[in-house]
Image 1: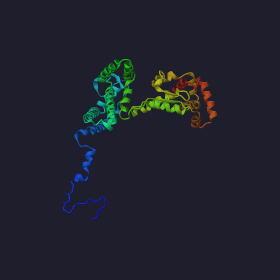
Image 2: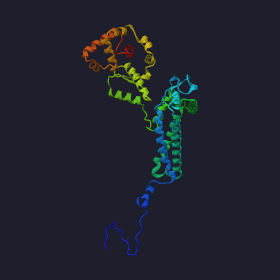
Image 3: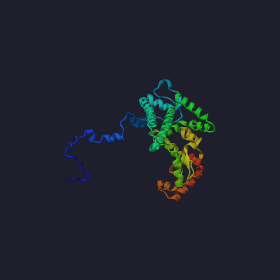
Image 4: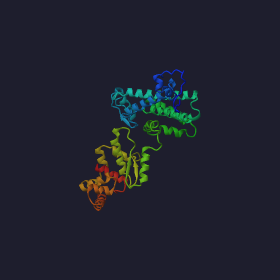
Length: 361
């Protein structure tokens, strides 16, 4: 009898093998080799699931948390602290706990982070004692060690965000430990807690693990992109807005920064110094501060006032201003010269442009 290469030849006296069990029929033995079912291998899955919980609860908390050290007067639901001056970060933390009932989310976020850290640690310990870091798995082992360090650092930064007594005490302890390091200790301590540290730590806390925290900030990337394009447009920048409620205010501040810039220059709101006080002043105080005899006279010429307002809104772009006003460019140049003559302000000077803008708003 002849048989093809793939046939199995059996002797006439050999009884046929019984049918395999349903599990073997679906190849469960192969799956067990690729995905071991020992309980210790669930540590990696536990870390993945807890990380997903961290992302979900963190996204919810980010909707209400305000990473700012600006002083505000608390007027929330927690009676004992009403009327007390505190940072905006702490006020938003109280708002999460007492107004939006987010204490449960904070607790889940905290314990998911604890489980995440313990799961990664136990996973690495199991890999060490079973020799899983040897041979071709050494790179995976090193990545796991680096991830554990990032997780611990990120959790520490998250602990500092509420700006309450507990987080402040922990921050001072870490600051003292860093300051004790010879030569570079003072620089590290300043980097940690110098200036507006809550927005800085919040940005690291949000980006360190999920996005691996690229070195250049959003403002740096935007500034570099504008410089590479070498445009003659005035550009204003403001820090990334933590919540949707801050987007409009951030846009207004970036627009003020743009009006103080020279053509082709990029100005940051944080570099305006005392000029920022004019933007935050009340309408009456702002009018008294910015109105001069020249700007008052300009208001008596509606066409010129509208031209100046449009010119500043379009960041001193002559072509776009002429198109928006539906006039010829030569007519626009004539109006701009008249505006400078009436107000005695130079439209090429950033501070004069800011004064004119505030007087017209």
